[in-house]
Length: 315
Length: 315
Image (cartoon, rainbow over all chains, first blue to last red; front, top):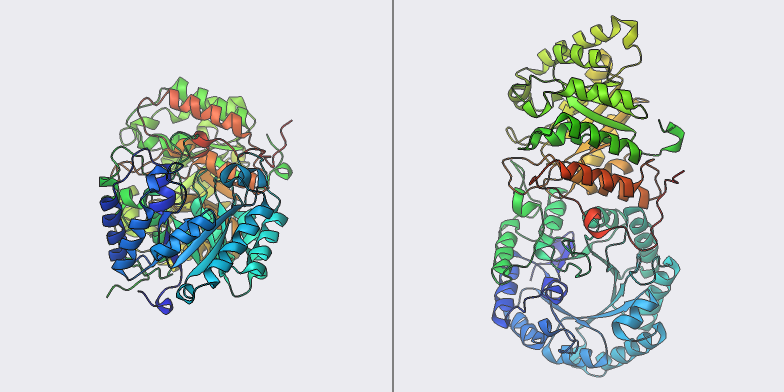
């Protein structure tokens, strides 16, 4: 596993979760494991291997327990998984994840639609997960992350009041979160808003990590990532090839493109611990198992600049 | 013409020049005029209508004088044109441009390849253009912009020393430029480099406008635009639909996408004077005359966020 001291920015690949849950194709378990192995080879320090949601809701991720176990057996990187509720947390802990990623939407309308809970009900569920994690010393090393989805706007209710986001940051921390992620789930954010929200959220969170999760739906994914970086954020989610497009916006890109994000950081002199060539090889592995799914990204097409020197020195 | 006081950021559409010079299709003169009229209707304050280069080198822009005359006859926006040399400047002035955009590359190898001149020879040519413009009171209102191409790196010689860029900014100003543009001609820039170069260039240029010209070849066009904005830049080139892709990078995007740039600024509360819906209509006009040419951009696919309120108030 890369030492923290060798990394300036943590890039968290969420493609095997956020990417695959939006694809038409169901990627076979063996293919997911091959893809994750290729990500490990590239030096990706944290990978979201699945989501412990009911399989009938997201059949693409029905094999998450098996994928998490295989990823953990590889070693060399942190394995995270999304959890919507207590039952998901139980299954994720049993599978052996390093990080539980609990999700609540800043937009209550979106939260009701997504997990059928009010904010109050989500917080109750979160408290039960905190208790579960505390109930067994075997889970002492597992991190519990609180994600705040739709923090920059919502497709159902439109603008979201930043005060709601800050309140949820406070609530997560008060109730036992080890880290926070603030997510632009539907690609609504702009760099000014990103700078303001992350500056304030980081002030509230103190020494806890506040990670950023952006979508590139309106082209601003990397601009928002740079704005968050300027606000001090040092952990970013991304999807190889920008997987995760919304079925309601045909042709629109999904998550911020991991390989372009890594290129941006490395070009700026920030070490990600990731080898860009090997990351592009992992992209090829992913594509080979996603026949016909649209992928995005610039660096895969254009290649790095002549004379490009990444910040990460490969052994 | 929009009052300067009503605009926070000037967006300069260079599609009819930088975009069209890279297309396989030659757009008919009437189509270019229809496109420019649609850009005017959207409120674009400055449009690069053509390039006064030898027609045999860039046949796509052989009708630049006619297009400039038609654009000037419309009124309501500034008409710019690229000029590589004194002869081009004569023809552009005769056609009636508001702004002459002279180009020199920071990379001398690129300058030799592009205009077959050393820096010294380019500066001599620039001085002759300054003298030409000063020779007739009729040209007193024409602005002379000095563009520095390949300021962030070069496909021929790789990295470019920022000192060269700063030296050319000083030289342009000392010899009579009214404004400066710093261009990432081949899409090599990263936001850190952009912040550093524009901060220093603006310090040198004092009250003169320093504009930014980005390509999105490696996905960082908008991130770089935001970094330049943070460094105080308030004039940006763009191409509708990200036209201007490089023939040597198949599928790669070209110039930064004007409509996404406008969306970013307006979402951040900065007035461009441009109506996004009408700008997308102008994009459709462009596309209707560019059968089969690849176009890019996110906002055209995804549409604005629910509840989006642009900064520019339309009359």
